[in-house]
Length: 253
Image (cartoon, rainbow, N blue to C red; front, side):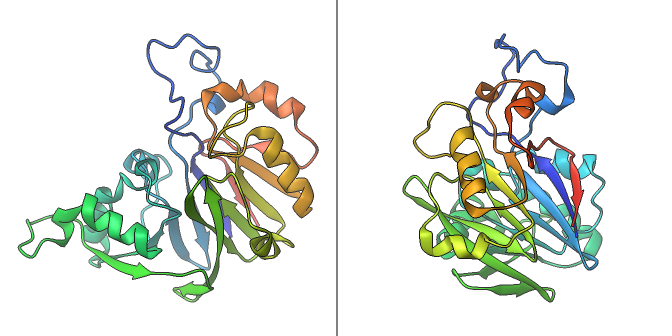
């Protein structure tokens, strides 16, 4: 299984032209973060988890020429806004794109992309197949996926486990009854917004503590705002087995 980090950043604290902080002005490519998303290639299948506003740029950058399904963690715009660009895969693969998410995510998609689902469809619009999932294991193209229900302040979000890999973004609380789904993973990817505490995200200290509690040997942190500091400096502070992810990073399990 190969995991590619398409983006590791967040709309909170997105670098802007007027910002003169050290991260926004950094020349280190690891400090240049598009919105958070990952691509997983497993057993000749290709899945993307979330399609943020940078989806098209990310897929072109990584030269991902085939896509079997899109899986959503939650309905916030920085994780769904790029859905329109699946149309390229519709055209190339001559198929509707399966889109997986919990009921409230699919309902939000139908509202925000109403033209996709209109009775009289405009030529060339994206074609998607909505696939509702619940908090129980499911399969895509024969690949087993286990949802993990976490909280993003008051919003439920799905993390996902595939084999020995667990992916969780936008989280500030993992219920005890869900932690057993994560334990035993060899790699966990977890949100760590910044160093200061935050209402709806783990900060770096909390993310580190969660990895230690779950006893995961390798962790990568994502969904980072520029307030977290320079990549090179933060990595030096992290315990063994923990790293900041960066856009374009690839790992194999």
